[in-house]
Length: 238
Image (cartoon, rainbow, N blue to C red; front, side, top):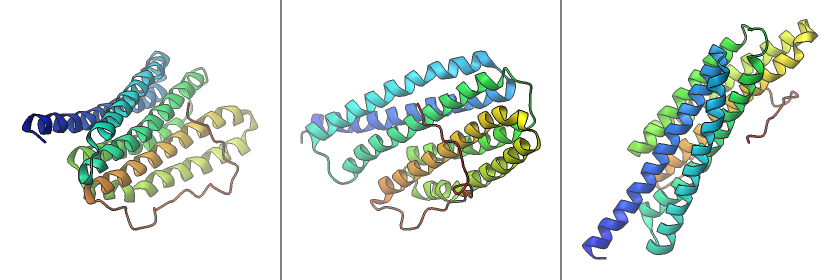
């Protein structure tokens, strides 16, 4: 390829990586805002977070277009192919995180109409841990850092343990006072959304490792969710 063509190609690869980083930043801010809306009982903030999910969807479409152009016109191989494919996969994971964050904001609107409950503080702690992992894995993507990605991958159990604790606490809460079942169910949905967001961060970590190393992680994923045998509400991200 000519020098001009090489520079153009490099620019396209850089652009798709920049779009993924930008999309990740928007999703991170959305989740932060949803957690803050829950903690501060700020319904106006929750409404803004719900609306901001549109930006994530727009960026996913941009990345898809960039990837299709690279694949069709450049026929990339090696690390360039990995970069293009992982950009598509990571953007899908980020889009799901955005949907889950939007769901949390929607739940915040409902919870903000109820009396304050102490249990929301446990959810805030879980949210902070989830945010920490998302930030760390996005930093790993920007640096193409396989070791940092592995560190996030191995931390998935921490969010699962927090979820297990909140799950048990909520069940106790509902059994002690059946009048709280509706409220506790909303809280349980929030906890499950955070747990799923953590899973998507782990999925991104696997893609970052593949991008950096050219091979997939050769270990079984650590998993600490002990609620699988229980009747757990599941909310489809939307």
